Length: 396
Image 1: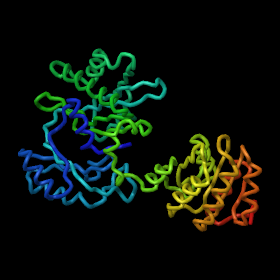
Image 2 (image 1 turned 180 degrees about the vertical axis):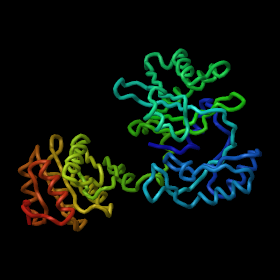
Image 3 (image 1 turned 90 degrees about the horizontal axis):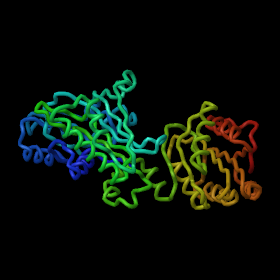
Image 4 (image 1 turned 30 degrees about the vertical axis):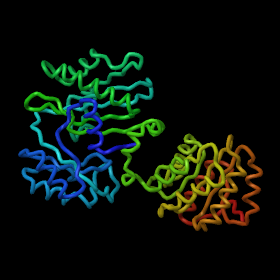
């Protein structure tokens, strides 16, 4: 789960992480009121969306007066912002963050992530920060330092000093850096985060350390025990199909292809997407119906997949263990009847009660395509997107 920058900074303030003074605004008048309350000579107006690259996309503006804050806010709120991390249509801006502008001597990058290999919270830091950190990591990897944290003892001072030294922080900055890093670690650990990214971590002209930008992501599987985090969720920033799928216990991620996928098991779903790509097709989604794929769940999966107008064919790939092929087949039949499915549907069933499942499909009187292997199913689905159905097994 992602949250907005202004929400991340509010959370960081609770851990005494230094961030610029500021507040969120949902309208031009609110933005002007925040600017007047800050009572400074320069402001930063930042669009609040769940995407990076806002500066290059025009979503970060410097203002030198309240009137300039009004103008910058009016140019952002109610309009889509297109960045390298949004869709071509951009992300609709509903709010902005108004902050005091600060004089920056230099910038660094500091992040905390879960390293899956070591199964530890790991610091990733770079002595250069800002908008081109990805290029720095790609072209100058020696500038990146990594430090894994032993969960039994937590983040230790010597580790913080090691990272701070790499970031060229010394003198009075060193104890401040240690304090900041340990606070970020506590925030990460206490809230079941999977990512905290401070980019840039700024050194100001008066030698202070400030988290000028903050990005946070949280473990969806732990949200149930963190209501103060789940309350920060912004459904407007998420794909409505993904939100609805979650409500039905389905794991769904929208993609940009035209082959809709309904699969049980995350690994099989990934393999199915790979098989589609192998046959020069593009999956429209990742969808895992899970281990208890009842007819109702399968029907809901069909409905959500078909909400995507780009879907030209649906591939159902079930390898039943806990699931039962006859249950899944009942769901397919129910979905095709209730939803009046008009695109080709390719079905591959294997595992528990597979013969019973095939019988349900054969006796339904509905038109669909069947395959015995994943490779055949993927090839059929890709061909079906162009209307080709020759040499397929068609049941009516």
